[in-house]
Image 1: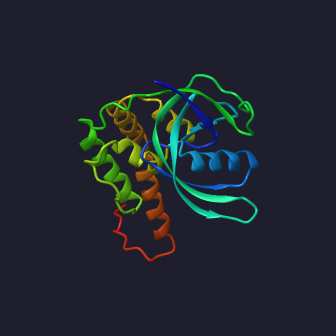
Image 2 (image 1 turned 120 degrees about the vertical axis):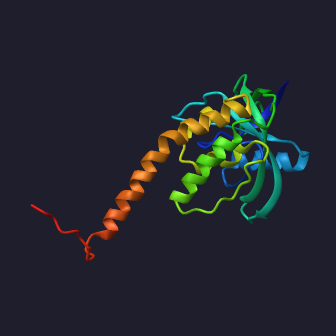
Amino acid sequence: MEKTLSLFPLNLIVYPGEDLNLHIFEPRYRQLINECLEEERTFGIPAFINNKLPGYGTEMHVTTLHKRYPDGRMDIKSKGLGVFRLVNFENPMAGKLYAGGEVELVEPGDGFSAHASALAERLKRLYTLLQLDIDYSPTVKNLSYKVAHKVGLSVEQEYELLTLDTEAERQLFLIQHLNTVLPVVSDMERTKDRIRMNGHFKNLDPLNF
């Protein structure tokens, strides 16, 4: 399905279901958000990476106008709805200050995967090493979207995850990433332990020469 969206390119990745707070200060985006509020319509955040629009983004809904400043700036809360592919990009849109374009909405697919337990096991190991509290449920729908920002992915990797069609593909992507990251983090923890021991008295076994 194709539709026209007002577009707000950003150097970040937003996933469906994710909450995003934004401070709106540029005149073009003040116009965009005001129109979304007045007309109760959505807008799109296409990923802007390495000074390019690689093509995927997330449709957003403004959930709350948190604060409006006297000079027209705004603090808003928004939520990701679904993934889209850019069909064309017009900057600016005719008669507007902001960009827009035609997008193709990506079908969300099944939000569950048989890989969830394997992913959850690796996430638990990572969070234990980092001494972080677990703030997700391994049985939640679209688990990959819930944890993708919390496993040390680069922006490019977060974008790659956004382009994957199924939850199974996304979970496998995160499992492969964690398989690479966990040994590094574990080694860092061992190094930190060794550093902590420096300067302390140690009980050493006698050596026989």
